[in-house]
Length: 191
Image 1 (cartoon, one colour):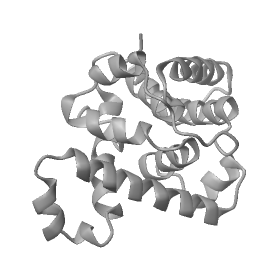
Image 2 (image 1 turned 60 degrees about the horizontal axis):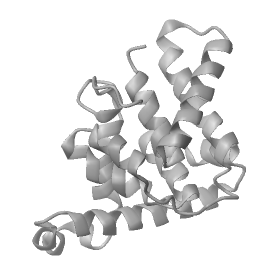
Image 3 (image 1 turned 180 degrees about the vertical axis):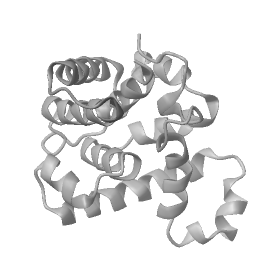
Image 4 (image 1 turned 90 degrees about the vertical axis):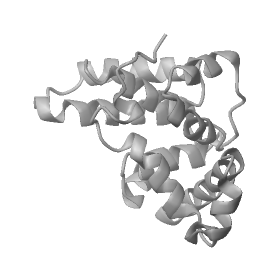
């Protein structure tokens, strides 16, 4: 129960829309509750995994790899996030489905390329290529959004490869359930 906002945000990032996130969230949590009894320490990771599996079944990201169109409900959900995280989440939502799934699973949830490839039904090299495309797109989106990014971009090592800088920037909000990141934020995100 402590991580419901984080679980909903995971659903939101995978689905790319509020309506899709609600379906994914409900299916994943229901499956998690009905599923195997797990140790309390594993409940969070089990719930996250069932949400990812539910999202893969619902949205078939390999077949339907189009970019999600923003809608007013998505904008209202973004408004509930901490201000520092809104541009990162918005950039992730602009990725095509397959790249978004790969990015969330590998960079944010720390699944290996092999795990991602098994769950998504593709080769590990496709996962690596999709993550590279996602990081490049996120890098360009994030660079465009930051007011003072032009000067920093010219002077940074990220100029040659934005992947490490973008992954670190975004991952700081998603990796731990310490209360500092948006996946563990106390404000309810679900409707």
